[in-house]
Image 1 (cartoon, rainbow, N blue to C red):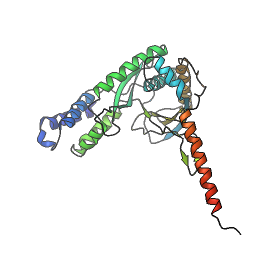
Image 2: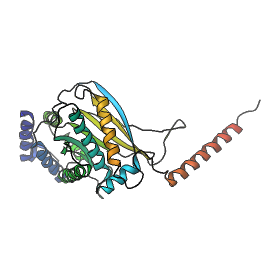
Image 3: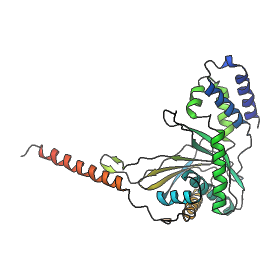
Image 4: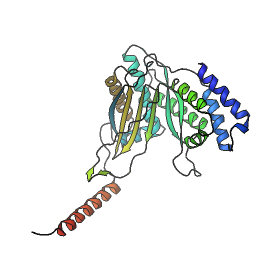
Length: 305
């Protein structure tokens, strides 16, 4: 892997000579040091199946009820992000086993929040981590991934994307290009959890029933992005078909893993939607009343024949 090592040397040279990076502050310096730590990991992606890449895409969708997933993650001692990643890792391993190419670990990239009280807005970074994909109990996989996420969050706390974006104007384009290309070759799949609207959404007066996000691939085999909306977790599965030869099989594996994980919820078993949120229901009733009142007023102002 000469590319990442070459980029590593370039960044080290820049860091050793501050005059090459005018205006580089303490936060940016910490970010570069975090970047150096990331570049030390030069292992290639682990999948024996997902080795090819192309510009051909296939999109699938999945859904899971919000409340059972949340309760299952709490029962297992973690957060919703961990449950989401654990189900995806389990499905990726099952996909490989069904095709006769079992794999014990895969590397994923995941958006991790680095927001603090001092943050002015959303603050997050992309972290890479190895996740277990071999056969094992759900609780054991969940615990292992929960620990991996905690370690990744600690290692990536200085590498927020807003700081990296600022530094992109300071670092040479050749460095940034080589880093992006090299790092994409080390990741098998990507996941992301996007916060959705806490209230019902409308487009031209029509209620949005489902909202599926589609995340970018960036050189990985697939990207599974989850968005919470209307008591549901809507997921968009963006697939590179040169890497994943059977997209439907992968989609089915993920759906099965989600249902198996939701069995750990103490209430609201998998497939049973959570009861409506009273606050959202009241808001929806008020909105409908306001729309009906506005329509009556508009009708009354029309000229009569």
